[in-house]
Image 1 (spheres, rainbow, N blue to C red):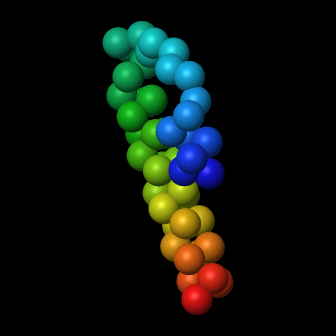
Image 2 (cartoon, rainbow, N blue to C red; image 1 turned 60 degrees about the horizontal axis):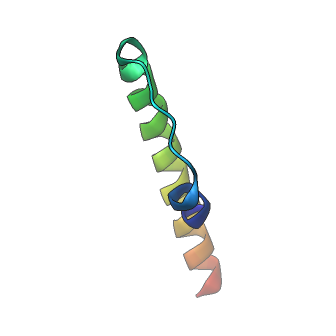
Amino acid sequence: PMMIAKQSETIPVAAASMPLFRELAAGVKTQLLAAATITQTRAE
């Protein structure tokens, strides 16, 4: 998931939408980090 997120295209976000976008992005980042941790733990 992290590789896909890094390779995706960017789309401008309207200034009025930025607070909600940042909130949603933080949630997705947390989920990706959790998924990476689970994957790493299973590999060990």
